[in-house]
Length: 303
Length: 336
Image (cartoon, rainbow over all chains, first blue to last red; front, side, top):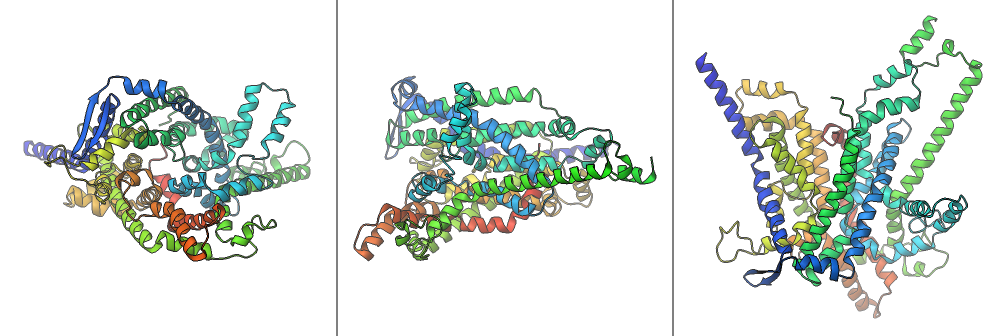
């Protein structure tokens, strides 16, 4: 009996050691290529950084860099505000759209496989190199402005829409948001690839027997959506909120990230750039916490 | 209630004839049918519309990549070129030095994504299957890496690889690793490459759902933990591995951010740089060949052809692997 217990203990120990060995790559990588750079970047934020031939030199300047970023940089505040606003306004749009599209793609119809392949294409094409090229591309711009239906920049003709909604006597802010939202339809669609995928996988994991049972009990489609689909999907909604925020503030066409990069390599220097990215990180963390916090309250875990 | 109605109920057809109480059966059937037809029409419209917006940029590129210069100034031509030409592709091909850039990029990205796949699978497996102190912390840290904007670590990463000293282990101010493939290899093999937290998380969720008996059976048969992992767990992880590999490959292929840090702005012949250099080289080549400066529109045609050639490998890979995509996602952790 005693020897048996001793054997079991060694097995547990062996398992523990194996587990740690398997996880070792990440621990090393995290410390060397993640934790260290983060701490350094915080230090850089409070220093003036000078790159020399054999290394680099730091001079402490206190909060100077942060002050420069916020008070002296001509663009930073505006771009920061716009970027954050865009992140916040994108989240509901992307979520609603991807949820809707996922339930559409979850139905049975001819050509479903093709439609799915097409819808995940943005995941493949959301390319840094292509996106940055597109911003300055002549043909894209020409075709977008001259084509009569005008996909981007004038989807459905924003002016016509504005006058149509304007005739409904709605508050001005609401109107601006709607027009802006319609303008961003192509962007929203292209930013929803992964979210559709996640929702779709979630929808497929709901056992059909639940719906059958509720139909027999006399539930309407509306009721079974709110009583079955929505609660089961609620953890995924939280996942997607987090994903959308993270994705949109690290996107390749993000204006602020370009600004930070330009500041580092050609503007006010590494110190100010570090300070900027910390301010940005703080702002985004706040948004993330606020959104995830307010959502997680009505997320239902059914396990 | 008749037997038939009951059977209809059991088979999930509550509209079986005897169950209809309201309205005349026939009229109701027609109403349901029309409703269905209308819905499928609306659905088709929505899918076609959204699908169009998705492939619109691709269509623009294809259309303009085969346009000849005359078509550019032809007022009739907007979308479909009248005199299609492959000249743009030839121009882009030569000015990108395509075969060279393609070979370099494919090699680099394949090596990087295989390394990432290996390391993330190992770490994910460890987090899912073993009990040891600090396991929860490591899982949390893996998620944390996703939330931090890459710009935060931009400069330190740049400097660390510029003066790579392994925490002071290498004397003399460190070695310059920028411009070599070492930064890619080092980050990929330590599961700290591009969005690797997501891969670790996915693999962890996947292995969590594997039956524990599988592992125990292997132990009883005398397999070591590593052997168990390689010959019992991995062969069953196909869809998850494909999904992670595809994501890893695609993101790495499209990445400009890390690539530009790791190469330190040096002219390593990789696809993103090749694409950027089209404008410059094509301009020179054009001047050389035709003796005049090309118009901006002209260069744009070359660039669109180049962009298509840039994404072609990924599109081909996606076409081959997309069937496994949804299946893999379903079984990996992306679903809560």
